[in-house]
Image (cartoon, rainbow over all chains, first blue to last red; front, side, top):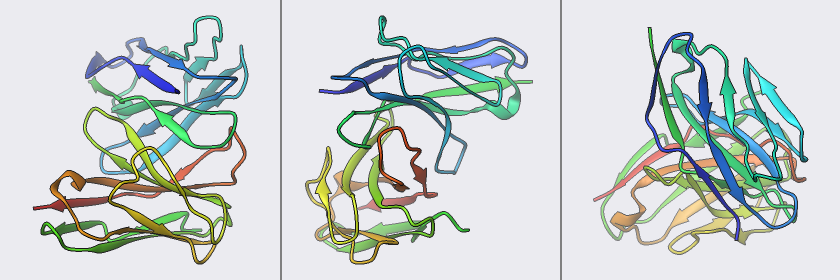
Length: 112
Length: 113
């Protein structure tokens, strides 16, 4: 079946540090890959996505590249801000539909 | 546009009670979904709908029922609540095809005593 594995948190960084959150997946066919972000007390928001191999999704300084050879979609940002503190979820949709399979989430805490 | 809205925001039930969670979207989306979020487990799909009048089971459907009588509404019902159903419930909607963004509501925090 389909599954998503992401690094456990919390991840604590100082402002302006480099961020990497690892995400690997198992899926049949060619899934679409997503990163969603959840700010405290809110629902999830799409951060970025990639729909085919070697695509790079980017938004708000965050980037992730769809690596089919390593089945990975790691999230990166060159310089984090306090306002980036949130829970980040890696997810995929299988080719036959649009149902999301989520990883367990990674909490990011950025200190001033 | 309000996007995806959910009512209520919070609810406390006793074991065995029933309740219905309401989800509404004003984006004319075909697909709608109900998820539950538990600590360390991400979100898991309970039920979903690919159009008005249709419903289907997701990953964790037991103990829940759903209805999609109108395109804009998707109801989640608990007939006899159990403590294991204590969770945060999120509704989402999308246009439907693979790769399309799902838009999430703000969530309902349910506690079953």
